[in-house]
Amino acid sequence: MGLPLKILDLAVHAAGRSLLKVPTLDVPAGALIGVRGPSGAGKSTFLHALSGLTEVEGSIRWGKTDIARLSPERRSAFRAAHVGMIFQDHLLFDELSTEANASLAALFSPAAKRRDIARRAADRLDRLRVPPGRRSVASFSGGERQRVAISRALATDPAILLADEPTASLDRPAADRLIDDLVALVRQSGKTLIAVSHDPHLLERLDRVLTIEDGALRADSLAETT
Image (cartoon, rainbow, N blue to C red):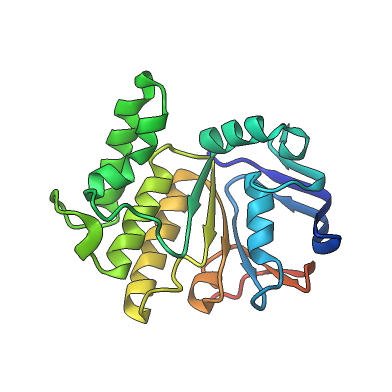
């Protein structure tokens, strides 16, 4: 299941300037949240803050854990245990097979967890219709590569899924197929999803859409369904 999110007085600064301010935000466990806004508005900074990848002021509480109060080492441990991340550029190892890429987290996990991670990775690859076989991902299409990346993010069964422009590099048919599968998987598993995207086809499938402009949360609305 997902984790609820509660933000209070969140602020991110760098080089003496403000990058992001979010006074308050409440997200229930299992919600699917979109984040939109112009390039450079602070959307990726928002994801980095939610994942504990950057130092922040204020409070970011996932469930009972305020990650803003944790040391970098403890934030890293929280991220490994509870957060799956999907990147626009896939970040796959081209020389490895789909199974090896999707189960990469097993290399950094305790021995007792490695078999479960590999099993879940194989299951997610199958459910996302990634072509089977042991060939490397170097020859895969953009849509296939993103499906491997999503399988990798889900292999540890995280409560939280953070996605940065997951459909940006895909053509429309591939993006729509990916949206269908991703939304179905997340809803079935009850995970909390926060996805930064310019893609209206993705945003309209989510529960709420946040708008970030000039480093500030400007709007919070229900997604428009079609």
